[in-house]
Image (tube, rainbow, N blue to C red; front, side, top):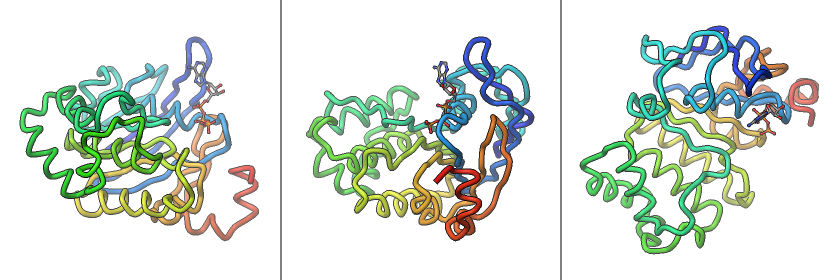
Length: 234
Ligand SMILES: Nc1ncnc2c1ncn2[C@@H]1O[C@H](COP(=O)(O)OP(=O)(O)OP(=O)(O)O)[C@@H](O)[C@H]1O
């Protein structure tokens, strides 16, 4: 479904990604791990089109998308929840969902919102509350629902556990896993929290010096302190 071949990207004249190769199949779940500053967020930005590729090929469903603007990639089915979630803090939960639906031209937004309210009852309860008044976990659920309203086929999440109470982290992992399993939406997640990644049940790809240097089931990494020190610096 998604294929990156020899991707180079960065900021201005600096190159952060130096030859990323990655394939994500339809309905697959993958995690991107690595030390701070190795380019995990930069990789997600390159996939969604927030930064330009310097070199390499990006394919989605067999089509080259590396030159397409972000909104066209979204229309093809790529949804992105950035680090910090970026919900609208002063808008209500309902208006946050509406804004996401209008942004991608979803005409049947009301039916979609009703479905999401059934799936995530906390959002129905809090539909009139301002985004800023939600807890970190509730904001993450809202961010997921905003992404789902566009009916994506690939969901890209940057550090979904950031700012979330440890007791809620498992719930967020289970929610993302259910989204993947029930809807068949492929998931790429960048995370620092290894327990979360293991709970999500993903394959882990490790980035170092702008390239993917290893991949393994995340559960294997959990019990391997040598690899954890080597790749994650923990
Ligand atoms: N907007 C930007 N302009 C210039 N350099 C940037 C910008 N954003 C990130 N960088 C640099 O690119 C490199 C990779 O950053 P990136 O945020 O992708 O790393 P990361 O692996 O996601 O790190 P973290 O785990 O800390 O979020 C870093 O050296 C960073 O300083």
